[in-house]
Structure formats: structure tokens, C-alpha cells
Amino acid sequence: MPELWTVKRLLEWTTDFFKKKNFDTPRLEAEILLAAAMNVKRIALYTAYDSEPADAQRTVFRGFVKRRGAGEPAAYLVGYREFYSLPFKVDKRVLIPRPETESLVLEGIDYLKTLPEGTTPSVIDIGTGSGAVAVSLAKNLPKKSNNAKITAVDISADALTVAKENAAKNGVADKIEFVQSDLLTNVNGTFDLILSNPPYVSKAQYDALPVDVKNYEPQLALLSGETGTEVIERIIVQAKEKLNSGGALFIEGSPFLLPAVEKMLNNWHNVRIINDNAGLNRIITATR
Ligand SMILES: C[S@@+](CC[C@H](N)C(=O)[O-])C[C@H]1O[C@@H](n2cnc3c(N)ncnc32)[C@H](O)[C@@H]1O
Image (cartoon, rainbow, N blue to C red; front, top):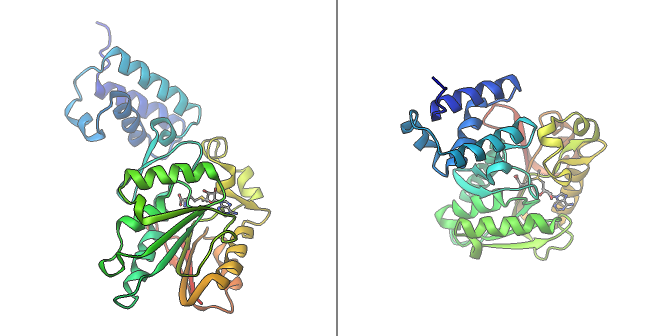
């Protein structure tokens, strides 16, 4: 009897295929791709284990699996990634938001909670990419900062197009001003809170990145320069000029890099390194 390509069997086969490719989350990726090919939510697969997807759906799925197997990230294949429990459109114009960056949003929200009632804080997200940080923050502002003025900048016009779509998709388009700018050079005004997940990969690290990152995600979003600290160093210098007195800077970096960044903040106050969900040094904060 010919084998039945049920949902269960397709997931098993694909998980096995992805395991052999050493993917970190083979089962999850198989489910994401199959759900997208069938145009259903991932959870719907669990009640459809014994059903056979239609031929057309299987053809789409086979295409996804082939491309994923060759390195293309699952998020780009399905055009979507969840971040901070919100849906974000993603494609090759923007970095796929990473779970560790959710800590940056959490810290931003916590900082806003410490500000006095009745103020209108001004916040900026430098290098917004898909808009992940700015949109999640806008969506989850503490009540007393609900009128915060949020700006999101990126040097890439393409990224800003995607970020604006994500702001609209999540119902916060009217809460964020998007500006094309090289860091803060094209930005007016001053800020109470500056957040950034900037490019922080060194040249050597970039050369050694896995294919699914290096060959697909924008180099501009990842590569900082020879040492990895170049962009962060410029942010620190510019932030000093643009932060209101007592205002806070939160920058994401790699665990290896943050000690060097800490030294750059030697004339700032309240310098602190914060761990991400995986327990790794991930964010550095300081106040002016
Ligand atoms: C690591 S990605 C972060 C994207 C998004 N914030 C996130 O966390 O998923 C860095 C972003 O910074 C942008 N970028 C790189 N150099 C920049 C510069 N000089 N000025 C402004 N943005 C820049 C890139 O285009 C990219 O979107």
C-alpha cells in the first residue's frame, strides 16, 4: 500500500530531515512551514494529524522544505515572525527579530514605569528594522506613559517601509514617527529613553555566521565593523547629546562585547549589564 502523507507523517519526515541539518528547532520549523502551506494556524495541525493535505498544499510545503533545507530562514519563507507575542511581517529587507531582544522591550517598559505621573516621555528606537522594539513598546506602554512620543529610525528606507507596515498591522501607526536617519544625525529633539539593538557583529564573527543568517539576513543589520563595537560607540557619543538629564540608554550587545561597551560608558551614571531570558549578558544600560 502506498504511504499516506498525513500531517503526522509529513511532520515526522520533515523534522527528521531538519534534524540531520542540525537545525536548533526542527519540529517547530516543520510545523511553521506546514501550517503556512496549509494556510492554518499551527495549533490546528494537532487536531489534523491523520488528515492528508491537498496536493497543492503538499507542493507548497515541499517547496518550503527544500528552500529551508538550503538555508533560507523559515520566517522569510512564511513572511512572518512572532515577537513579544505580536505578529511581525518579515522579509529579506529586515532582520528577523530574535527572542533575546524582547528583554530590551521589557527593560524599556520598566524604565517608563519609574517616570513621574503626568509626564509625556519621548522615546526613540535606533535601528528599528521590522519595527519590533518600537511597535511592541507602543503596544505595551504603561498606563501613565500611554501618551509617550515614540520615534523609530533606521538608515534603511526598505526597513522603514516594513516597520511602518508592522505598526499598522499592530494598530499603533499613529503612535510612532518613523524617520530615515544615520543613527541620531537626522533626528530633532531630545529623549528620555533611547533603545537600540544595533549591528554588533565583528568582521571575523560575520565571516563565521551560519549560512541561514549570513546569506539571507541584511548585512547592514548585523555587521558593525572590524571590532563589533563601532556602531555602539557612535550611539553612545550621540546619545549623550540627545538624552535629557536623567534619561536612560539601553543597548543590546553580545556577551563578549558588553565589557568593552561598559568602558565606553565610564562618564555615565547607573551603568548596569542585564541578562536576557537565556541568562546571558545582553543589554547594557546607563543614565545621563
Ligand atoms: C540588529 S538590526 C535590529 C532590528 C530590530 N530593531 C530588531 O531588534 O529586530 C539593526 C538595524 O539597524 C539598522 N542600522 C544599521 N546601521 C544604522 C545606522 N547607521 N543608522 C540607523 N540604523 C542603522 C539596520 O538597517 C537594522 O535594521
